[in-house]
Each structure stands twice: as structure tokens, then as C-alpha cells.
Image 1: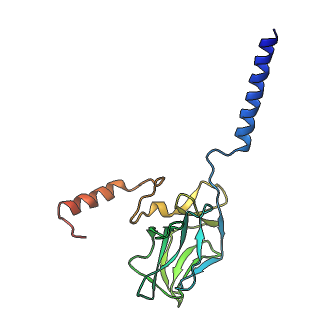
Image 2 (image 1 turned 180 degrees about the horizontal axis):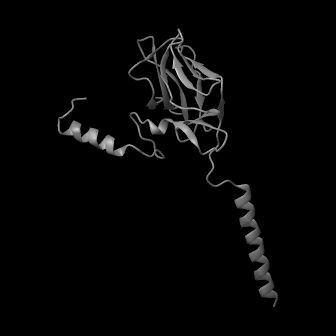
Length: 187
């Protein structure tokens, strides 16, 4: 009889421990560092400001191009010496010194030149905050749901596909590769 009650007690203790760990330890959540509306970054060869992911693995900001007074708005691996770029916004229209990336008070993510002209912008509305995630994805979100992204860099791939990034336009990408392979397009 004592053995059966001891087994039941151990079972209850293990069950309580399991419930405790489920309630206390998050399993699939990601720490989010919110970038509030009105925040901005300035393109400058002397200023190395960026918005970093909570772990510090990734950052978004301006990358100064060597031998030029121009900057690329990019996301890069921040913990490695080479700072490898994994995404960029304005490769065809580089930013001058003193250009600004701003998450406006109206919820728009805009890259503007020193005169205030728009170089690039993320198409989104009703944004409450931005965040550079540990996955390398920069998001614009609302306060309704932390998993509801109104805009994300993962939806606009450039040179690199990151491990958790899903391709939503795979047919288009495959078609472009095939057209290039068979010589229908040069670049």
C-alpha cells in the first residue's frame, strides 16, 4: 500500500512540476524590443547608430560605402567582424550623408534625403511600433496582436534567405532563375 501511495505522490509532484514549467517558461515566444513611433537614425560615416535585435545578432541601420559619401539602408549580422548584409532597401537609390530613416509619428517607415525627399518607404498603415527581431526580420506591427505584422523585411527578400524566412513568391523567383539560366535575360 505504501508503494502505491508513494508512486501517486511522485506522479503528482512531477505533474505539478510540468505545469509549473509550462506556465513559467515560455516555449515559442521571441523577445521583442519595440522601436517607438518618432524614432530615427541618421546616415553618417562617424555615427554607427542602429536598431539591434534583443540578442544583438542582427541590426538595421545605415552601412557607409567605402570611397563614397553614400549609405545603404540594410540589415546585417552584427556580432561578426564582417557585418555581413542580409537585406537592403535602397540598393538602386543610395542615401547621401545626413539622410534619415524614421518611424514617423504617423506610423510610416521612411528613408528621406537631407532635403526631406523620400528615397524609400515601407508600404504599411496603422503601425504602432517597429522591431528588429532575433530572426533577422525587421517588422512593423500594431498593438492588436504581437504576431500580426503589417510589414516585414522577410516579405521583400534581397540577397540572402535566413533560416526562418519563408518565400511567398517562390514561383516568380524560380521563373527569374530559369529565364536567366536559359539566356532570356542577362541580369
